[in-house]
Image (cartoon, rainbow, N blue to C red; front, side, top):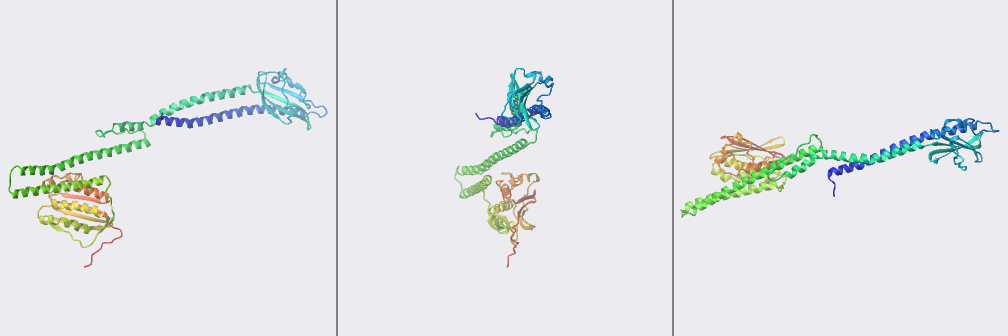
Length: 470
């Protein structure tokens, strides 16, 4: 069964802590052991030097191997309290003298050893450390001394220490595991909140948010980022629902008009002129449906990021002339005065098709909302490294309260709804395309006086403004 994230943190921490604690315990044991052994070895060395110095200072004719009264000292008589066991051998390895506390026991001589030799052994079940050293008198070996000291207390201390360390090791690790698990559980609580919140989010409930942790750490940033993501998702879903609702409404309206008109026509015979009038009316509604479908498909392309941008050098005035050509019949029918002179080329780096869609929507709005005998002025100007295209009309205009909503899909100001039919998608599409082309769109309007739209784009860096030759 796979471990949970909380338990994995505790286990990984336990492994690293176990290694570190084992090293620390081993170092402590080694340090204590070295300290204890150092003291014993120092005491043994002191005793050895004492006997060697005594023998070395004896006259060479008849050297004494033991100082008179040596065995009367307490440490050579006691066996329970700080005993020091001493046994002397002559140069041939035969027993010479020994301390009283040895009683019937003897220390074993290693006759083949000519240098100082140390070893751990037992004496009457007492652990001892003994040192064997040669006794020299004026450079001549005259005997051997073996000195032994009890290490029972030291062995007991080291044994107790090792047992304490071995018992404490698993207890410390176990306690550390649960403490780490508890701390890990509290630390990853925001992650658990994320899981719980995510499980509550459904299509009908997008308002759930993760509670932000008190500590502004990485989990705080993660929770805040996910909350921001949920805000964007909720906003996108709301806009999609609104868009679907509005699109359905906009599609049903012309269909209902066409259906109602045709149902009226078939109720009774009518004059051909009346048939022709109603059919033309239905055709205009069908054209409206086609325009709406085209605009919806265009919006769908942008939403799915399928619109490929082809950047090239574009002559702004030529694109304007092409758009005006498409609307020339409507401009003439309404006797609109057009102010535009293309005496020079203004070049930009952009996508020619997408830029023409922007201008098509802006000029289309100017033509639609400008009344009979109105006026539309189109101007181009260069401001440092930018090209400003301005389209102004003296049409119905937009109320100040509506200016903040004009880029919403299907939104149409009250003044525009009264003036002419439309889909309410033109400015939304233009705004999105400007964002895609890194251009800026500004709308200025006064109700009853007209509207001015400005598109600001980056000028082509390698091309100068060209004045055509006559």
